[in-house]
Image: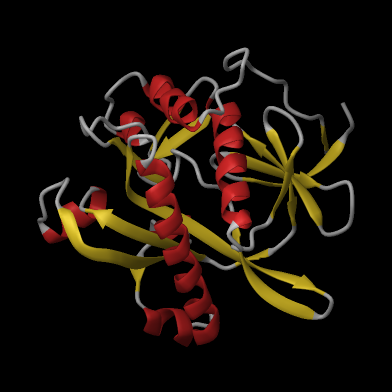
Length: 254
């Protein structure tokens, strides 16, 4: 396998130099973390499944005109993506009360919210990704007002589309987290969807039973974590034909 220069390693993915200028190779790991990496583990085959699920969802979103950094899947664990300047914010869209929203506001988990709620979190592991408001974002220069408006508009479009798509296969989109980046092309800048969309950053519940099929199974020690991810892929019709198997990662240049 070709030797590539590693540029960055995060909790769930590794970024390598791409084959052409302005591109990167995104490698999906099986590593799992929760509570800002206070809990760590491995979910066998997670990287393969997240690669396939994210490819599918990103592709479907691009079909309705949502710009993303995704170019194409390279193999079982890797994607070719456009290099973007990541905006240090996590945009969270909530449709049903769960997780930190339930804890902070005392709303019973599973309560349908009166409308979709958007929250902003500052991407900073040292500070545990704190909840912030628009005033923080614009005052500290993390994003301009127009950039933020673009991100919110795109996040709501993602929510509308994925809610319907997933409901069609019996899955409730409880909430999800997305990230955006600035893509510079032809002396112009535009905001595009980045990172991934998978059970790692979405809460996905069975529409009839409420059974969790996302990383909450790992966070809460519910067991059958791999099976939850596999069920999402199965319902979307993209579970690898031969099942989930491991794939050796690319060689790294020191």
